[in-house]
Length: 131
Length: 275
Image (spheres, rainbow over the protein chains, first blue to last red):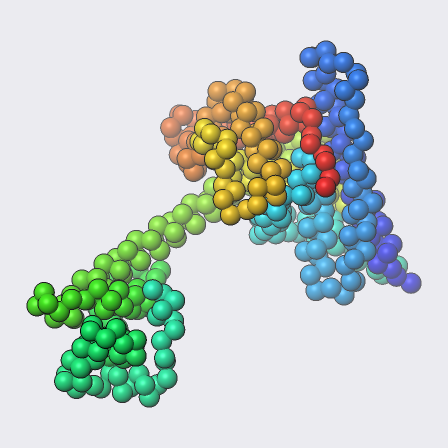
């Protein structure tokens, strides 16, 4: 039986990997900077809120038959990876939505990227729906 | 003025009657409007002169250089010019209303055409600049992923594709921040938050301020490309000509600059305070 819940869990897990990868890259850059600047270890990075959990919740809010399913999933994906990279507090700013709109439109308008979006996000969901 | 034009009574009978008035009736309407400020008389006068506005718009439209602007736009500008003329008309100067209004109508249409053409050019330029950026960002990501994973991007594995899409998304977000960062504004307090509540606009404003500072630390060639492309809206091709390089090289410098900015942003502490 299907299961949009499985699908969302799958996407959430995939996103978690991306966010973790982005987080690791940022942490690596920071530790390099600390070594160069010899900063004291007491200024250790604060743990960031668990974005992947929030993403999973957001994905569960999208109905399986929603005509805008693909766009909504892509938007959640972009919001997640961009805020993981540039700071989760950006989402507090009203212009964050405008930025995501612009990024999403450019990606969707590009034929090559649009195909990739289909193959990655949607194939992932569809394959789970057919299970 | 546009709002007032929209509020006119557009009932077809009213319009037809207004357009077939005798010259004596028109003179009476002018009297009511100019002396008594009668709004009904004003409205009838507007309807009465609409065929003339249409004729002026058609004359101007007939001399157009291209078909980018529709006749309805010419008619709209001519109508606004005619209504403005009506409100400013002073018969004591001894000039006929149509003579007086025609100059304003032509002026309104020329202003409108200039503005519309400029907008179209700006839209086309923005599209070209964004295309340059996207190609540059896509190229960067392909190389980065190939280097990291030794496999071609967009392969069968959804994880690889997701990684690629994430990289492109972050690159485009950085480009958006640069495009909108107002780096030419020396005073940081002068931000484009005039229409946005201050606190809501704070996070992106702060991030853009950090990016502005980071751009200052880029190597001179990367700084030049970023400044010319994002601040002066110069396409890669023109920057290449100016610097005596190829467009491909400028695209590479752009991608390197974005990578450096991204790396440098990662080294700065984030303000992750979720309200």
